[in-house]
Length: 358
Ligand code: MRU
Image (tube, rainbow, N blue to C red; front, side):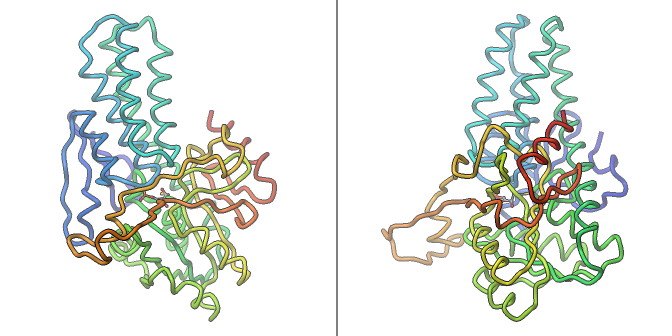
């Protein structure tokens, strides 16, 4: 079954495709200049694809890890349930060790493990079939969820709107359609006059390489800016709303997202511009009371000192490269989920939405 056929109205880019036992990922490291697909059937290689950013973006990481868990399960040779569960836990641990911040990774692996836990009486061969279907369901649910989030978010926007976004929270970061860019796509589909300003998002350039690429493909009016230009644009009255995605949202509504998001939120507050976060309930981590407890990934310093092979900084310079920051709930105007829009008392509303997802 092809993912592309399942949602005829969702249109657009699908970065993760699965059919006939093979996972295909568009290599996001090569965009926008090269559209190249890599194939996977081995869980260790799937783990490496997540670690090395072939695939990135919180929901996309979760979906990919779910397929990885299936491949790991498939390779387990025992017919004994207890032995299978021990080995399957080890497979999931390898996948869980790839990136620490986006909670969707752990959420998806937990969904895979609980399916296996819930079926101790099934032969191992049946469990493997069930895990394949679960991974496909996680993938397809994500697109449906994004479209629902899009509808809720679009309703918040005026008929004519200039939106600033940071990083890539689009089709490429999800099963398809996107979270923040899903809201933008839904607003365009609803006939609103939308213009997007895309932060380039140093150091990994998800904004210039990925957001600009996918919005251009969809003919959505887009202006690419460097990260340090957002304040100037806001001061000139050129931005009406900010919409970003999230990698993990704490129970109190604090939001971890791509490094630089906090800076944009502070600027938005200063200029009285609404700051919206669009994220599925799988990104909400009720186990974490507030943002101070969210683990922040630090990545290779080469992402800062180089662009491709081009060296930008003196050899040996000390570099700090946190991949995410935390925006306190007090700076967030609303959190858009598939179940509705949380505003004001996040603790209660987010818990209600998570419960609704089961
Ligand atoms: O390091 P990345 O590219 O995985 O970071 C991605 C982001 O920060 C996105 O904004 C976030 O995952 C939301 S994606 C729907």
